[in-house]
Length: 139
Image (cartoon, rainbow, N blue to C red; front, side, top):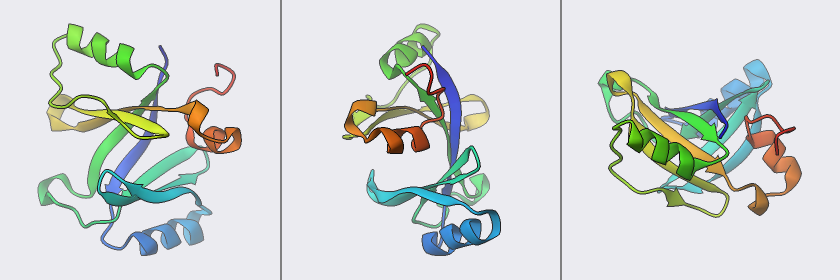
């Protein structure tokens, strides 16, 4: 099983302005812009790093604009089973979309983590290569 830190997921009061800022200032490229989990989500890349935006203002002022940290794996079920064996509790089951499956879990200091797997077979290879953070030689 492989895991890799993939992205920070941020709230955006104006998602179009956020995308424009990162594009104009740092040359960010939009990897996807779609409706997922009840909100518009846009993922951008800045070099090899990624930011994912929710099209909504921050819900919890104490947590700021960071919603969660995304950790990619090539085997989500095995990772979840491993964490459960170590005592971690999951409030929800793995949710599956056509190209993405994920589950949320709370880490130390109440950081929300999104554990996810990209469903490689449901994406064009070039798009998968842009979105994944896992070493392409492994796939």
